[in-house]
Length: 520
Image 1 (cartoon, one colour):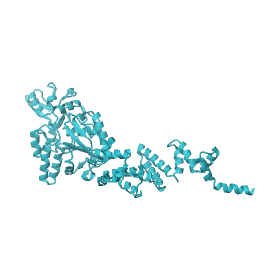
Image 2 (cartoon, rainbow, N blue to C red; image 1 turned 60 degrees about the vertical axis):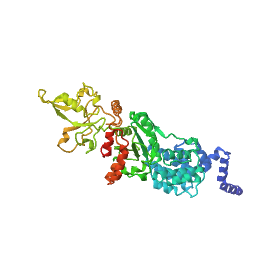
Image 3 (cartoon, helix red, strand yellow; image 1 turned 180 degrees about the vertical axis):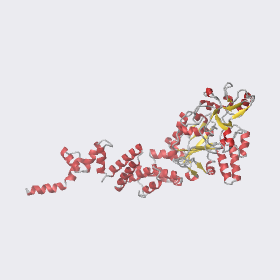
Image 4 (cartoon, rainbow, N blue to C red; image 1 turned 30 degrees about the vertical axis):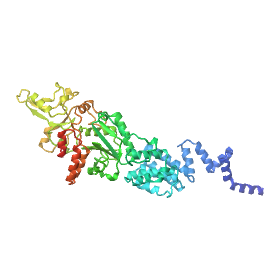
């Protein structure tokens, strides 16, 4: 009896190792496996976890137990929580994912360091990204993990606007060691978006051949070069351009070459949520030698979309309909919703036609109807598209009076016709004086358009107006923006230089002369 007790006691000391070996060798009974599970032996837990449904409560419980000592299980949990956090946009789940990444790191997982750094980078937490990467050893492994680290560091450098490390990487012998698909794709993107120029790295790679034009049309009225400050936004711009080209009728009038990178260090912009994006436009001198384009555009992380003369600004959340709305301004269309208080277009009755779709005119007239009609139509850019039988004046007061009084506007009965319909454009932005109530903004169509609500269609009638007079109200080239910014900064000589550059984009001699004088 005594010898039997000694045997059981001593054999129980070796039982975990024995059962683990039996399980690893797939040589175990159901009873042994159940006992091993009950005692939380790692080998049994791993088998049970492999059989569990991914993401189930059982799967989570098993991985939590394993994650006490197994970095792979901690990493699995981190990735799972990160996935559902991204799917459901729940910040608390990101916190849980980070907790499991940290556990995997405590268990000496270099992969977890890289994955956590990538998560921070996706969230725009650059300082945390960099501090996490510093937890890696100085000598990186020459494998897929090492390549992932290099790729992330390239992304960070681009995001921060300092591409010197990227150029150094291209010149180093190390670049030849990194040849997997993701790295080659990144290298191709660096050249595609003009982050690195004239590199010889990709010339031997057939897979790296790229198409440098996303949209070329013989009917282009203008070419618009778009910029972004990081690779994620540049790829987003490509998708936006493709959607715009497929869905928006204005696409036929705008040539959109491949988006280009611009270092955030070359910009000085104010871009905050629900506030109009503004920039020091003198800074755009840095790209003029590389861009052969009348207009340019910049996409930032946030800020209100707008067009200022020859430059379009918008943010990453703006969809193709918003982009189309802003592009219409470059082509010479004006907003049909209330413009901001003090807007230049609404400070008085227009001296000449200034857009395809808006005219600012007197509300009331007195005299002969036919003579008044002829006079008014001379100031309307869409006059040729108004039918002779469509009224534009409505009689007011005494119909027997010799000097009849008229209110400008097409009657409701003709609301489906091109005419002179009241627009909301100048409702709140007219000059604050006694004359402000005597004039208003008018438009060709009574119905809502994309100039009023982004989600509405851009009307066929407006496309016709654009085809009939494609360059009549086109915004000046972005070089004019540079000239204006320099003039406002007191740099008169430099401003004249850029006015001359802007004038070179004008085909009409009269417009060229006006631009040279600093007018519009």
